Length: 624
Image 1 (cartoon, rainbow, N blue to C red):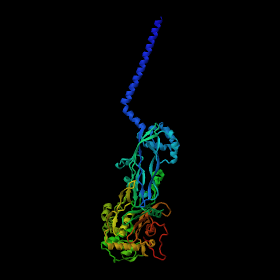
Image 2 (image 1 turned 135 degrees about the horizontal axis):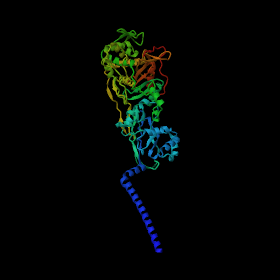
Image 3 (image 1 turned 90 degrees about the horizontal axis):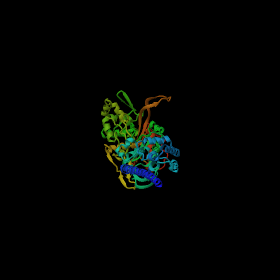
Image 4 (image 1 turned 120 degrees about the vertical axis):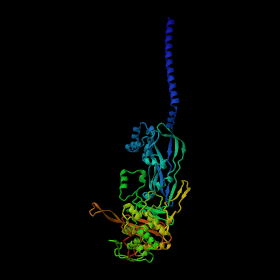
């Protein structure tokens, strides 16, 4: 009986043991099969995912090249920017992380989601920029709560800082975030979404020099995406530094003189073509484009009737008015239409056909030769010279003086201006040229259009003896360690088509315009500085408000004011062109600005004193 029971227990135990062993073996088979599947079938993919989770590549932005003025004063610098990013894969749960981030950093939650939406399609293990330049307060809040914000990083990168903003806003320009269209362009092949590139001015024109080469880091991160250690680093290469020909002190002086006005002032070195100052008014804040501006601010900028985003020195086109008489006088002398002794009588008008063309001085200038015509800006004299020359010969000389085409300055979007010919009008309007139109052209009105920079280069060529230079703004380009890789040199575009004897007559007329009692710029003469120049008053047709402030009518509105000059009289060191929109008279609005710029520069940057005034009892012309 005992043996029977023992046999029963033994069989039961054996069966249980067999079942247990079978289960264990089956479990091991499943485990081994799973391991084989993970290592053999999915091994490569899992290895890649494991490496992505633990080791990642992080880009390092390159410092942008700095911009200096001619005296090595920094104009555009770089400052640290704290950029907020998120790695979606590490930010679980995403909704809760975004909600906490908004609360801690004080950033609108909708703005964070909007940034994520823009980056839709970005791999989940790559950082997405949520907000650039968050500020130190937000940075501190995020660092304090970093362990409660998985997947959130704050990286430091260099960001542009315009030291004197809004000074030099049009010339230096500004930077902005690269667009989707720009990312497709080959010249931005090394850029990525969120990068800032030059959008305007020197920043855009010399983007290839200023932008450095991006570096990178291989970093190890933990489960929340926080960097544990840096494994390897490839240093970024800084961009090249640029030294401009601009004298920042003269630039600031020009901008102050243009304050509360619309217009432009350009100063160049007549012996090299280097641009010493280029002011356009009104200005704008360059740093606002870096830190970001509201839609209302942007709309206010682009809808402003004074066009603050336009560089009026090179982009705005105006009738040259009486400054164009410089070219008419040169053409008349060189073509033999007039000489030093030629004299015309000016009664204050010229009747031509069935129309009367007025001189600005309604009682007339009397007998006028070329010197008096230039100094007192007699319209009748130039009407007659223009008729003798004809529009096409006038156009040839204007083109030879550099008008009607870009000057070639190292900035984008320079306007051509317009010098009309008979063929041009026929092609454009289908109507033949009328001789009466030549009268308007001869005094710088009609179809004529120029830029302030073009007129600065014209008067510079007159002052230096007839050499036309290409205007240059970039003086030197250096590497970050100070090695010079580019040094500008004067570039001669040609010579004025005028003999030295005839050029002397033109120069003498311009000297008298400033230094003769009856000259149109007599009030702006400078003691001890022999300045020569030419005033101009350009008539403008456009909208004008009626007396009740209601609807406006088409008609003549306030004239534009011009003045071009150079100094000293012999071997000039500076040439200036000033255009004041709706300034009315070149003699009273533009000439004092140019005179103060010249005085400031030639006196070595001495503080501004009183502007020159007319001598008591002297006759001062107001027409130009």
